[in-house]
Image (cartoon, rainbow, N blue to C red; front, side):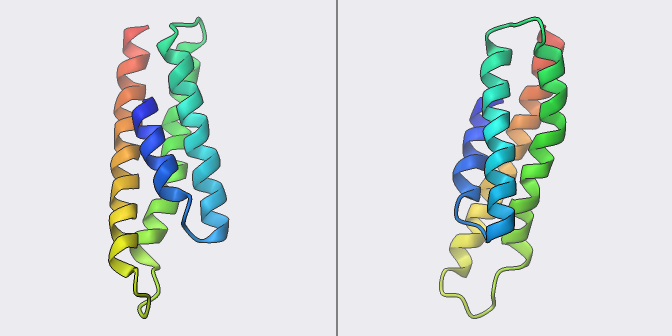
Length: 104
């Protein structure tokens, strides 16, 4: 869960303004939730369930990178790679949340 949050966090820092805030906050919370679930706290299932909401919310910033990149931008290919890695991180976070909620 934390690895997926870290990947998503790293890739959404450079997106467009409103979506970068959305991605950074969402994936930052996913990283924090992953650390708390790893400690096997009592509220781990609640935090894993919260990750099921915040990880796709952060994935919206990655989708913006894939769909709405300017056509004349020189770094257009780089933005597509960043968006794909962010979506991969979102998938890892979701898989970790599902696995983490069953483990506790």
